[in-house]
Image 1 (cartoon, rainbow, N blue to C red):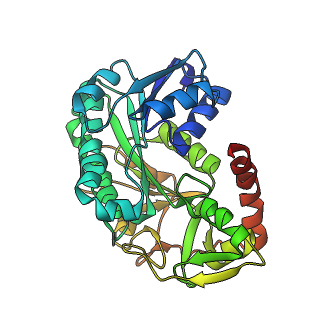
Image 2: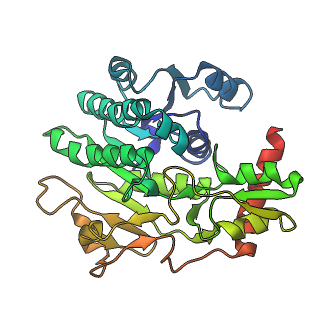
Image 3: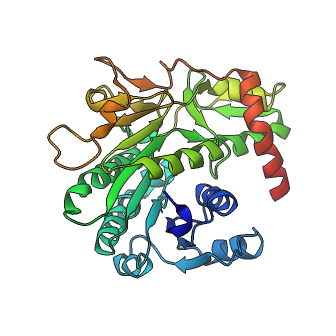
Length: 335
């Protein structure tokens, strides 16, 4: 795939993932054009004027994925769409349920319609471990968005549009994540954890971006890509960030899980394992694409699940420190 011939649009392009993706695109792939599509005028201004994203190949579009007509205009001439825009804070979605539905479900539907209407070549949507057996509204909306993305390949017909999803765990240091919170709490000598048994999957921002790029290059349409990533205990994360601090247990928040899942037992029936990732293929009865992965890997065993608790790869405190030190340095620059 020759990125230099492609026009790439990123929904939610002013977010943590969007900025890292665009920086990597500029540094290593040099696409013909990059369109930053987001609803926040100030963030676009700061990204361009202060963040250094003023490259001549970048265009800034103000718009909301809830606005289908605006997407129709923005997607004209676009080859690749990376769909990252979402309401993602669990408590905010719990207390604003219809807003989460309008953005995460209806907004994703608008992205699909605009992509197919404009004959966009590939759409890769970002999802989350919270979409697996969801217990909160955010996870439920992301599960619905995943299903829309996968099943909408049936609408493509004779067009070239192909749609797939990537699903992974917590991104280290992303906006609203626990790492900045713990760093902020550190001077007080007390860090808050909701439950001492809690585990989470862990992936760096750059790892997530490079995984998405690989998925775009290799997707056929209808797949759900899951990277093999390590787990960590929340208590170990707290000890890595503030070894001397006291840990205060405050109780699980509404919609929170003790452990997260990336592949459910039901999804395992169509899942293929590769060396560094899993590919959940479309259901057998689906008439569209995405089935050729069976020749590139091996099926997972009956009863297989991939959770942060049963993972075979774990980060200890030293491993966590190696990942968060660069994040701390970046956060210090932003102050």
